[in-house]
Length: 283
Image 1: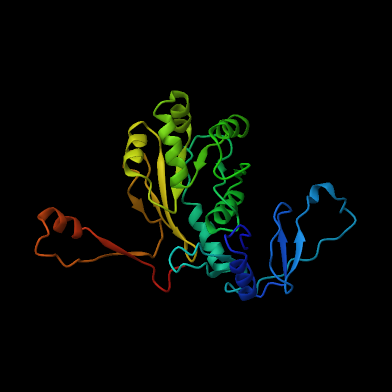
Image 2: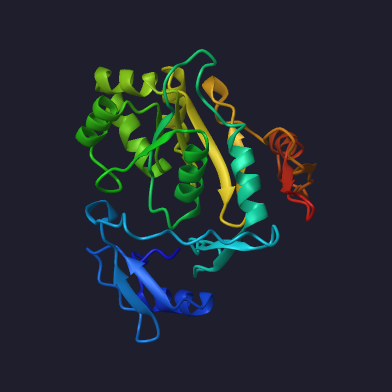
């Protein structure tokens, strides 16, 4: 799964070559330049085709949990270049199981959980969100563009009955700022079961204001290689993260050498620092 919107066609070609790709199915609006080694096919709307006379091929049975289901790519924020990350059957199953622990619906609530997409399904966050919502019979709403204007958000809430707003921090902070002067928008944010965000820290001042107003901000901490590792507890203490039940991740205290000029407050803060460790045997 390669995002053809990566800023460099050369990077797209390199990722396809490293993955051993033979063909690329792409959005018709895009014109990817991938060289002669990879065949390109524009995606079509299957709902408009009469395929009733064709038999579906049998699904291939998985041999083991190490079978690769798909290959994703990282954002490249750490190394400066996206890298390929294979997702195995065991990895995918475990991420689906993890997601079942994370629901924001009250126990007596009726209807589906309905979430907004926050990006391309070629990226880990949107892909796992989509799969987990299919697993729980939920629904994902696809906006026309990312980021989308407020009038489109209002339309999605009205027509699609969104229960979870899912946006990147840099986008959701703009919505929060508008809510300062728009009581109707603030009421909309308050009505969501959760407003989830991740990938970058949310601006602390705006996050604190939103929580004080009763907006249920929930932070997610994840990586392409592992998936979701920690989730915010929500509510007024929503800036704090927790691992999911049955997790084998470890939070190990770490010490930081103090400079001679460090004050007592800094020393007390460093004593509370922990390192998130993912053991090799963690599912």
